[in-house]
Length: 233
Picture 1 (cartoon, helix red, strand yellow):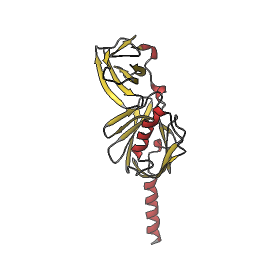
Picture 2: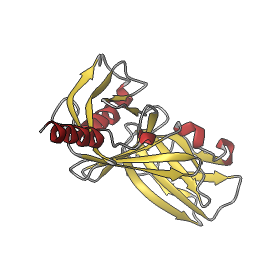
Picture 3: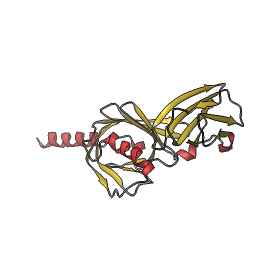
C-alpha cells in the first residue's frame, strides 16, 4: 500500500513540475492581446510583461504603480492553471495604459474567475523567443523574450509621416524605397483600428478617425518595423 502511495505521489509531482523550463524565471514582454476578436497592441507608452515562476505568476505594467498575479499549477508540458488571483498595490496607472492593462488582466481573469486552463507555446522568432498563451475561451496573448524597442530595426529616420497633425490624409515618405508596406493604426490605448497593405501607395485616409493621438506600426517588405506617432485634427 505504501509503495502504491509513493508511486502516486511521485507521478503527481512529476506532472506538476513538467513545465517547459524556458518559460520560467524570465521577463516576457507583452506584444499583443486578442480578446473576443479585438486586437490590442503594445505602443511606445503602453506596454506590459509577465513573469512565470514554479508556483506564481505576476503581471505588471511599468506605467502602473501596482502589479497583479496568482498561484500557478503546471498540469503538463504546455498547460497551466492559475488560482487565488489578486491585484496588488494597484494605486493607479498612466491613463493611456488603463485599457491595455485591464485587457491583460482580463485575459487571465485576474481578480475575477481565472480562465483555466491555459495552453502555451514557445517558438524561436529570429534572435528571440516568442511565447503565445491561449485561455479556455480561445483568447490569446503574445510575448517576446526581448524588450520591443530592442528588436525594432527599422531606422527611425527612414520613415517620415506628414502632415502632423493630419486632417484627412496622412502621407508616408521613406528614404529606402519599398513597394509594399504593412501599416497598422492603433489608438493611444493600444487597440488595433486598421490593418492596411500599401502597394505602390504612400497615402492613408484618416478622415474617419476622431481627433486625438494615434500610432502607426509600419513594416517593410523585409519585416523591419517602426512605430510613428501622429495627431488627428
